[in-house]
Image (tube, rainbow, N blue to C red; front, side, top):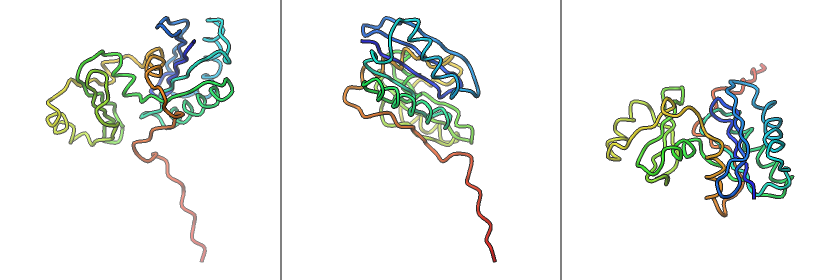
Length: 200
C-alpha cells in the first residue's frame, strides 16, 4: 500500500509517495521561506495524481513535526492528521533530526540544527536509533555534550541538502502503533502576546 511522506519544517515544502517495498512513485520539493500553507495541499494532489493514487488509497502518512519552524511544525501535523482522518489511514510524526540522521546510514552521530537564538536543536543517534529525545542546547555547551558521548560524528544543515520526504515515508513504516503526529517545540515561540494596558 502507498505511503506518503511530508516535510514542511526546514525551508522546503516536500512530498513523496512510496510504495511499500521502497519504490518511490512520485516526489516534489520546492525551497520556500513562506507559502507552505498555500502550496502543501496542491503539491500532495500533484504527487498523488502523477502516481495515479487517490488519497483514500493511502495506507500511511509520515510527516516531520519539528524541531524547526513553528508554522511548519503545526501545518505539517495538522494537514497529515486531517488527510489521514479523511482517508481512513494512520499518520505518524517524525522529528526533523530523525529524518536527517536516516539519510546517513547506520553510524553513531549527532544531528545539530541552528536554533537561531544562541542554541542548537540536537539529537544523538546510534545505528539510526535515537538515543534520547531531541533537545535545545546552548551552543557553548555543545563541545561538552560531544565529549560526554565519545565525540560522535556531527551532522549539520550544511551536510544535508534537505530532508528527503521519501525518508520520512520510510521512517513512518517503522513506527508501528504510534499515535497521531503532534508538533515538537523545544522552546517557546519568538513572538509573545502583547500585554494589555492597565486601566487606572
